[in-house]
View 1 (tube, helix red, strand yellow):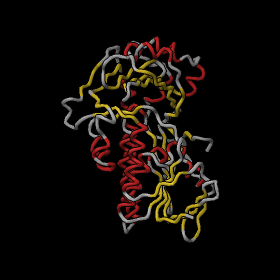
View 2: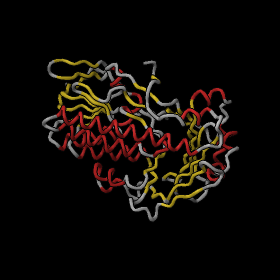
View 3: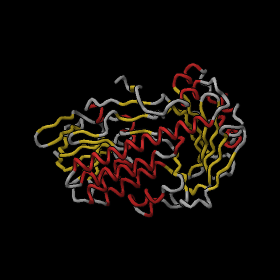
View 4: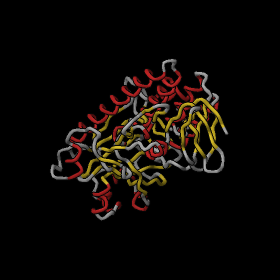
Amino acid sequence: MRVCDVLVVGAGPAGCATAIRTARAGLSTALLHRAGAERTWAGESLPPGMANIVRAVFGPEVLSEDRHRPAMGTRSVWGSADLVETDFVANPLGEGWLLDRARVDADARDAAAAAGVAIVEVRRLGPLSRGPSGWQLGFGDGRTASARFLVDATGRSGAVLRKLRIGRSAADRQVALLATYSDDGDAYCGTTVEAVPEGWWYTTPLPGGRRVLAYLTDADLWRRGGRDWHALLARTLHVGRCAGQDAMMARPAAYPAETARADRLTGEGWLAVGDAAASFDPLSSQGLATAILMGSRAGDAIAQRNRDAAIEAWAEAYAMLVAEHADLRTHYARQERRWPDAAFWQRRQETGDLVGVPLNGR
């Protein structure tokens, strides 16, 4: 049996950030890594102002041009048919980045190991129980771990929260139909976004000569709309051209992309971070940086002498971030008025509170 002070389940950026902070505070920390357990998107953007957060947790070398691509700006077709560019070059918040997400995850795990975190490879999670000495979690192969404090960093699946019977509520049922392919698109080094009647598209060049292209809509609209990704792409005003000819041969896969939160962020001896705690609309490009920031702050709170008060303050700050994101999401939706009768936009132009829509049957 592995015994530790803190057991972090999930080795994505949020889990690694939490583990790094608890380990540096002197708490023995184990990080469970289930390779392939959480599907991550092939590409992700980091807007200006977020690079310092990432470097502060994982080290200055984690964002560099030999790993990722600097982003020159964003282009959007939103609220009108015009393609409008926002330049990052003169942004006072600093540079933006186009990320190789797999590399970010690997570098985060390396940083955790360098901080003294024990990284444990597991295939699946077994039973979870709590006794006088703390939590016990099985790995499904006869091994177990015991910890005084437990962190769920398992992404949108919320694997630990499910074992604790903690529900998850969503503001929508958004999905991303996403494909990557060899990049033959235009030379713009940034993300291009285009709103359409029942959702929105984005395309971004990736490190290594690849490109990501995604259509985001609600699951029920996709099911009843014919599911013809290529036909919808052909109707776009700008994204199809920007994405290149090879996009018409790409095969998209579906990913969950709902805006959601756990019904509880913390309880006695546990808390949730990253997408397990709250998942944000990809339009905001805030999910990764928020996961790292709040993961590191969670680690600091766990290490405080007055742990309960520190975690309570952390949870209140997290709730404020979720509320601010909900307001921002509604603000973006209300800027798009070209299709007043379209269900996708109608659903998002009301209040942005994350209430009332249970996920996974809970």
